[in-house]
Image (cartoon, rainbow, N blue to C red; front, side, top):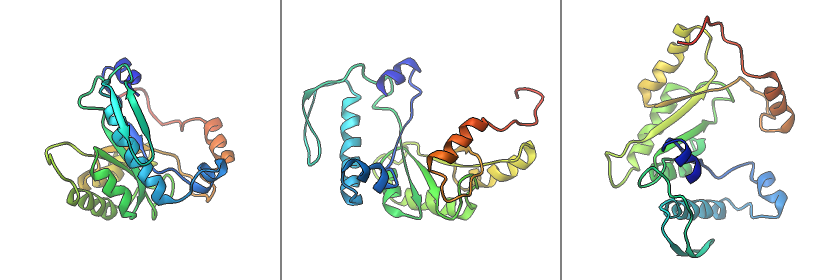
Length: 206
């Protein structure tokens, strides 16, 4: 991440989350599937990363990780560190409380299947919840990334994205519709890759 931050001139954003499904991503390797343990690791690991990104020597004796006089080079260009965005399912509260401690949230919405934009009221509820848990420097910017599939027509796409922006979203992630229950399985992922990006009805670049 630090190398990418240097190569990009300080434009890296780091996103993290608990991962899932935990039975596959952790249990298949004999690792813990206890979400409380995974959450502890994530929180400790994020704090440790922030220290590593300074390029200075780090001594850390935590519950899950150890570091003895370790320095990682290069340091990041961004100071004090690159922005950290946290993923999670809304309305699950713990991931969004974690996001409130960092710089942004990349939520998935349980009532908006893959590729479907979230409801404006859900976005407003989420940002209100996060803002209520922000501490320290309240002037520090906070990003909220939402996504879905928009129509090729620019005016219709604006009708989808505009209300979500007004509700508090700061970034839009364009996705493909995939409402099936196996969206995270290998076969549908390969089909999406092989199909390539959707062709938009456009005469060129705007």
